[in-house]
Image 1 (cartoon, rainbow, N blue to C red):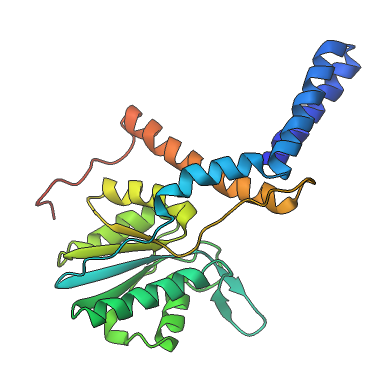
Image 2 (image 1 turned 30 degrees about the vertical axis):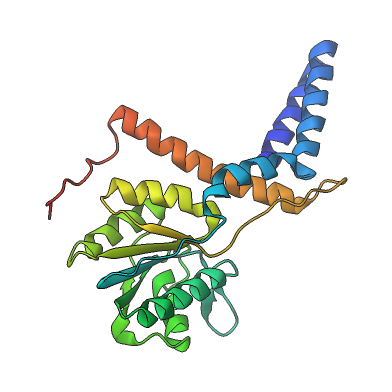
Length: 251
């Protein structure tokens, strides 16, 4: 996304050169080079990431209740030569959900890990099913694992999971995802009537560098994806395109 904008700026500068619009060409070249350096050297992604993640830097102390549900959001899968496995960004979430499960049990509460994620990459297995196998291997009993394997995006994660959380209603819901993903996830879950305690599994930082790094372009693109999802939610709400919020006592 950020590199695409750079390419568009260069293309416009080239067009201006062809049309002999020298002043516009120079302005576009300065803007394109400045953008490339600001993103690649880390300034832009650092600002974007900080605004998204600052509220989740410190993990909260969870007040466990009588019935607790730890909602684990998917982060993709990978097809290996042997099997379909959790993606590289999924493992921090799996570890965090497992740690929270053990904390919950130590506090004496009833604990369920609810894994949400369908086969968005069309690899033949839902994220939730793949993650379930890993969670079982990490020691979570089958009776305390629940799978939601139909959702294809964060909006559906919230929509489909909310229906399961309301039957029966949990006293405490903990939402586990990456710090960069939590702001949008909280927004969507709240829309469907789920008030959750957000707990980050990982924290993404830009790498400040005198030379542009491809890593910083990736970080900026990931952050922009989150901002676009948040902006789209507010736009759809203003246009009345989001489904009605569930009312207390519904379903």
